[in-house]
Length: 96
Image 1: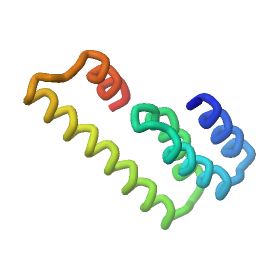
Image 2 (image 1 turned 60 degrees about the horizontal axis):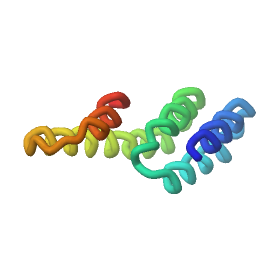
Image 3 (image 1 turned 30 degrees about the vertical axis):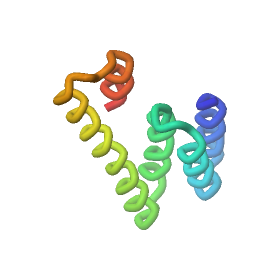
Image 4 (image 1 turned 90 degrees about the horizontal axis):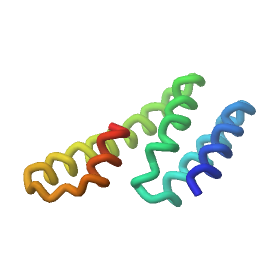
């Protein structure tokens, strides 16, 4: 399922459809589980970096920083409790 979203978002980005790409990335992030968001964020950030969109860029980076911040808090908590599963650790550290 994430492959469909990433291919679609990348296609829209390649076609220079800024608004459509942004909306598709938002829909992808809402529909995919949090463990697969790391596949959509690079395309979303590339959109913001490629085009000069100041207001949207600030909102997207705030949203992205919340995800990165929550991921680090989750890892710290799991490491403190020493209950982290190796699969979960791999998912969160491979994309950090």
